[in-house]
Image (cartoon, rainbow over all chains, first blue to last red; front, side):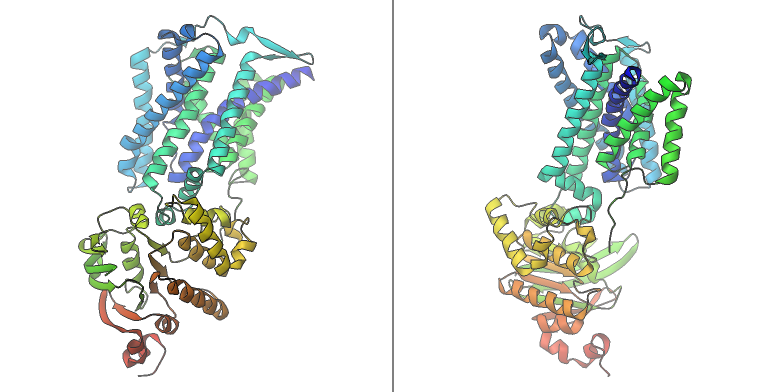
Amino acid sequence: MEEFIQQLINGLAVGGIYALIALGYTMVYGVLKLINFAHGDLFTLGAYFGLTLLITMGIGDMVPGPLGIIIVAGMVMALVAIMGYLLERVAYRPLRNSDRLAAVVSALGASIFFQNAIMLVYGSDAQVYNLNVSAAEYSLPVAGINISASSIIMIGTSLLLMWGLYWFINRTRTGMAIRAVANDQAAAKLMGIDVNKIIALVFMIGPALGGVAGLTVGLCYGKIDYNMGWTYGLKAFTAAILGGIGNIPGAMLGGILLGVVESLGEAYISGAWKNAISFFVLILILLFRPTGLLGERVADKL
Amino acid sequence: MLLEIKNLHVSYGSVEVLHGINMQVEEGEVITVLGANGAGKTTTLLTISGLLKSTKGEILFEGKPIHTIPSHEIVRLGIIQVPEGRRVFAPLTVLENLYLGAFTSTDKAKDEATLEWVFDLFPRLLERKEQLSGTLSGGEQQMLAIGRALMGRPRLLILDEPSLGLSPILVKAIFNTLKSISKTGVTVVLVEQNARAALKFASRGYVLELGRIIMSDEAAALLANPDVQHSYLGGKK
């Protein structure tokens, strides 16, 4: 039982990260019906920006403790958001009215560009988050179970950001406009909504969340490399599909579910079969719910 | 002159569908545009709202060109369209749809007053305000689409086929509501299959055929015109 709860917490932690990345895929798909294949690399960029700010530039030493990390997290969000904005302007907006495949190729190209740029700047070897304090050393005993500090950070960060996003999308005017654009762009224009602005905003929010996820992975697992975005991106993309692509709560649910399935599968079936198990679950769910768990709950009536 | 369309040409790709349209709308008027399917009515309306771009000609609103500015800025001027097929935001609630109609507004107090007026016009929307609009009936969705447009406090209200697919009782109700909206001073441009109802409501009308205006006159004169009667009112020649 202890082992089970331990694995469940590990699953929730990594699932929260998947969910944060998945939100970027699902939001972009929601407004543009486009899979942003470069999104995983924006996650990697977040990890590397965090490394530079926290360790190379020494913000972690200047402002020790959690406050320094929160400051860095804010800066990472801003920087990755700018990269997301530029990505949309350069790689997607010029192709908005052309064939869907052109945008897909452009997305793949952007992904390769980011990976190579990171490799050029930081080198192809894995980099280490060399902190004086390592989150891995601390843990919190709760009812006989040791919850590691990194699990707490990962779960806390993802829950906080997901709550923030959910509030923003459902309770603000701009959030309402994002949902309107996702539903019907032409009608949104007739409401006086600047659709280009909303799309640019979505391309900033998604990468900002993905960037923080990258920073969190760096902080908690300690090691990052230039193509980590591929594995995490693929998992998060899977999570977005699992929950119903285009659906924001779906991405959250899908991410967490995938993390838990993966972690439990690794512990109780076989570590080597970890990925096979998660994709088997994906196939199984899609066989019975092709639109994903929460996809298209609302009937459109004409 | 509130709206003036001069020599408007619009193409879809290489196919031109509007071949030089001229139209004038005075403040406070109700104008109807008649024409068969494919005549270019919806194209004209979408071009006024900026969703389609003209290849030639100009559209002036209070003397200023609007064919060069993006659609969200056209809405800000008070040119608000109820599009064909209602186009309500199905996954959003009725209330959210209505507030989106007031997206460009910065005056919250005025929005609440407008909302009350819309609920007075369409009490059904008040009953269903928390409901997802995709679950409304066709008639209710049409009420919502009109209510949503009113939330933007239009100076020029453009309606594309507001009675399409509605029962005769509902059509009558919608037209009565449009009359009371028009009485508040809102200028209306109406495209409508139900030509008889449209001409009874409108002060003037234009007849569009294959991308050209072939007739324009007082609504009463068009109602009495044998050609119009034959083509659009089901009369015999």
